Image (cartoon, rainbow, N blue to C red):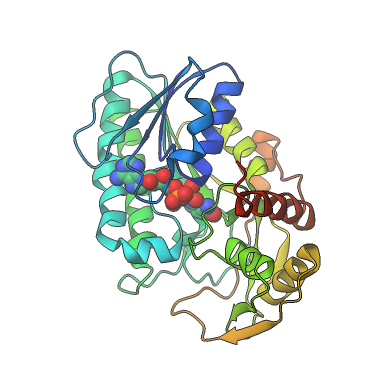
Length: 315
Ligand SMILES: NC(=O)c1ccc[n+]([C@@H]2O[C@H](COP(=O)([O-])OP(=O)(O)OC[C@H]3O[C@@H](n4cnc5c(N)ncnc54)[C@H](O)[C@@H]3O)[C@@H](O)[C@H]2O)c1
């Protein structure tokens, strides 16, 4: 296949490019580097099946030649990033989604949209199945992301219903692993860097809020299956690890794995920070035969190893 991946230089996008290339596909990566980094894809440039276009997907989009599959992953994803770029976040999930859907329609491509567990907001249903409609504050600080993802989902389904486009939506739950930025504000890189530097780990609130963390290789496997499996037109999938941990337990685990002398410091909880988030992955198990394989400790060990290496200046 000839595959277009937007957000190619980001955390998940770069792993996706690698995966599609490893499976023998041709990949066109597109990114404007607003939150991504050239280093994430530098090693792919020597691959003759990889082309990179530096471009803002909110501008008119045209790609020469056939495109079999479009994966729209461009979007600032960490709360710090999307609150720093609130209008851009809304644009990339509205105009950007429209442009990529338009391209997919013109080329007759299959389309996969990267949505988020944030569409469930601060959920009243636990764990969250795909059929849950969510509880989102439309004017809160996170709304630029949550509502934009909801709008993109609606737009994606409109292209499916009106134009018969073969679309699939993945609702990604917290994912972590190598290539996350040290300063992106997400809890795992923040804790790891604090621990490696011997600084106190900053836990928001009392740390009893829970999250479920998925290792990036597991997520990419799920996305790949959503993208290549036949007969999934118009389907939505939760992809994430249902293993649930409190933020306090996560902090303790990071201190243990890094053998750090750091302590834990409690700071004010962020506004609209959800209490619990855990995917119900029954549908992905049934239709994709997919479930995560890497547990939190193992994934953290791999991620810590990568952060240690890059702190020393390694690749
Ligand atoms: N990582 C997670 O836990 C998670 C959870 C839910 C959803 N997602 C979704 O997955 C996707 C990728 O997330 P990530 O964690 O890799 O984030 P990321 O910030 O590392 O990557 C996003 C990439 O998109 C690029 N980008 C942003 N706006 C662009 C534009 N207008 N034109 C071209 N490129 C643009 C950025 O430069 C960056 O390289 C996003 O859509 C995000 O909402 C991620």
